[in-house]
Amino acid sequence: MSAVKFYLRKVRLDKGGYDSSGFYWGVGPLYSYESEDGTLTGHLRAIDRADAKIRLTEKYATARFFR
Image 1 (cartoon, rainbow, N blue to C red):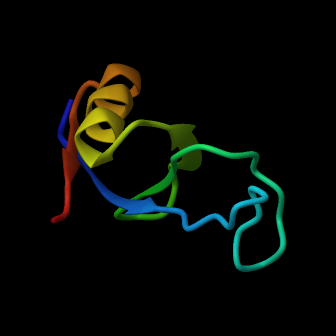
Image 2: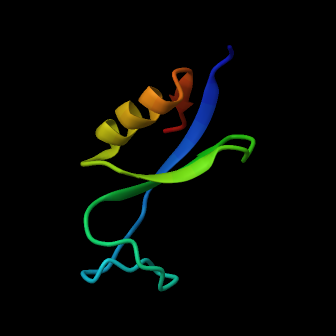
């Protein structure tokens, strides 16, 4: 299986747990991910970017990341 490259971004949440679009996510660090071709997308909770990369690699073993 070939590597899948992901964009990984921290979602900015206000103190009430809402993103800039007004969607409620709850409080705590949240990351969004999207594969290079846009077919794999989602969100995950992680302490920081390094933790998010570990969690996403557990889900997609061949995951690689853009800087």
